[in-house]
Image 1 (cartoon, rainbow, N blue to C red):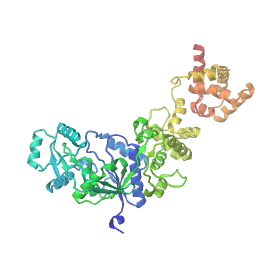
Image 2 (cartoon, one colour):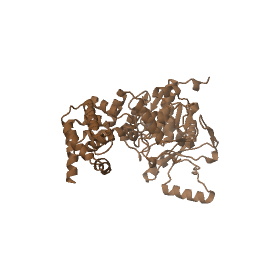
Image 3 (cartoon, rainbow, N blue to C red):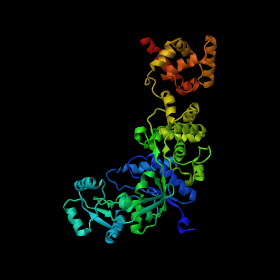
Image 4 (cartoon, rainbow, N blue to C red):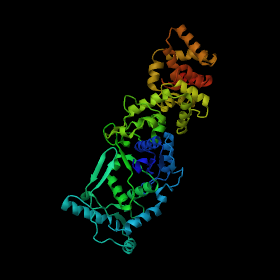
Length: 489
């Protein structure tokens, strides 16, 4: 057994802070987490913030919050600490400069001073002559004095790696060996004009110094993996195990993006999804567990996940399937779990539903069994806790339920009876059933006029639960309002 195989696995997730966590990034984080947990290894979270043009400082906290909401905890890194910090690349610039200095001194890298206009002219000329473009390596590399003089003149000074004159082969555990011929390699930039390293240099240095030996990431990075292999060879670094994940496509077969709806983890949290349902769904984007089973708890994912069962085929983000997963997860969850998740959902929204009343929230949850998301619960119950004059009457509901038939007459007859009854579900049920027998009406002809009168629509919990949540006073006020609006009309 080789030394690398005997090493304890250490994976990492290294997002750029540009906003909330994308579901593609969530999948990468989840798979790295599962690989590390299953092997008894370490999962590290690093922030790659060297692209200052896209940097959003607030996004760091958002990414951490999104990961924790999903239940993806890291052992080392940002906000947690560890022996290999700092864990933000913007705080590691001196480290990168040391390695760049080494490459420059050894002639493995060199300075370049080309302006954007000069580079454009080179590309046009080269494409006209050869149909392609590779950066022309200078015959003599500029020294520090020339670089300083160029900076003083206002020219952009970058550093480029000197690529080898041989083919470069990388071995990926999913896609196999990939070879980049020497003739297709270009001396790429490893330090930008602003003094920050490019992704390639910072990524390679950090993985080596932080002990990352298993790199699992999206397929979109596969075509550039040779660049990191070149840098590792130049710096004498080890080559980690590589595993690239298939692309995630939308329902039209295009790479998943916001044009197909919100694709951030936080958006699904705000929409009322359970994190365990989202994690279960994301785990199946490129992983085939085998058999007919699709439903897994987070703990079961740690036990069952196998990298050998990853697919090369692109995964499809099926929103209807995710909604089905969430519906089933809500139905299967215990009341305590639902209460905690509902309170989290309510904390993200402005709603009159009293988030601090646990007993009431439990009753609301029981009244809303069968919901697909917590947004359904709010749509069904929010009106019951708001001001009595704040909701509008749905014209279609009024026409169908109140104006057609004897809806208004039913309300007028029921109001004094409701005023005189005890306000419990049992007493209300007995009253309405007795009224139905007396008038020869089915319960729908009684419940729906009441529902429209007190909510403005035909959607709410059962009529008994609806009236109990409202209370006697609010119920009577709303019935009076409904009857008054008919008279005014």
